[in-house]
Image (cartoon, rainbow, N blue to C red; front, side, top):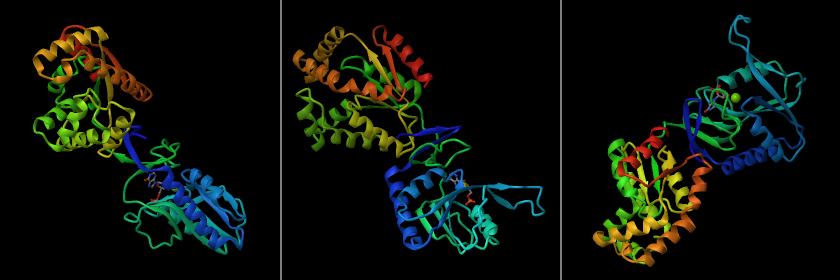
Length: 371
Ligand code: IMP
Ligand code: MG
């Protein structure tokens, strides 16, 4: 699950399938308890309620009738100008128990119309059930008998609910959010490919914050923090630091730069688990990954580059060919999987990493500008 765009607006995940299913089941149980001795007529108010009704009636264990209506206003043809009719109500409901099934009750205007329309239908009883309800917005003195999930005053889509016609087909609920900053990018590629160099240039050009897991680790190790010592024991062997340690540290850095234009993540994520954790974390801040940009350089060239760097950088993991090979192994066996993860979201971009530094920056910028 990630942020979706409908027309001009962005929506972030809000209520999961499981929580919806639980609420629907609970409603079916409650209504069943009250109505099991008769055959109620369930009336779904279209369009929004179609998904809710379909799930609801399958959880309802007793005899019932199911019907759908649509509200239509006949403005101009009626003296009040605003009276609505239930289109499709072609059934005599006299003496029946009627349960209105609404997807959402917001201001209660619709509900008021429903009560109005049923005044002269001579039903035995009229009950109202709604899956979602906004208590902060509802201002009417009207009875709602069954409520699935109360939500604050937020605009939601999915599970039958739409934004200007679209979004109904999502099986969970999303809420309106601000436009994510598209400049969150992942710089990707095997060790020595030039990620650090390019990240420095790109962060200037686009006013981004560069987060290099390696740098964060090395800074912790230099200060000999608890986390640093732990990280060191993995890094010195050329192994990856465990996910939960890495993610914790990254969250710290992102949270510190709340007002950044965006982030360049370098050296993270390295596994699908980390990628998912990063998505979840960014979404909770209304953000998303704009793209994964991978620098591509032949392996032979990379080993030579790393050994050269090891002579001056003092990095233990750059000085030994076996350790370098171990890091490549890690990269190609675990990390390459990430390509598929981002490819499936149309967020993967491969960039030729051989050439002059400025040339490569140019290539990267082209991708960034088009994100
Ligand atoms: P009312 O304000 O209670 O009359 O609700 C009117 C209608 O507005 C509902 O039946 C929905 O179709 C729509 N609506 C209200 N709140 C939302 C929302 O958060 N998302 C999508 N549609 C909504
Ligand atoms: Mg509705």
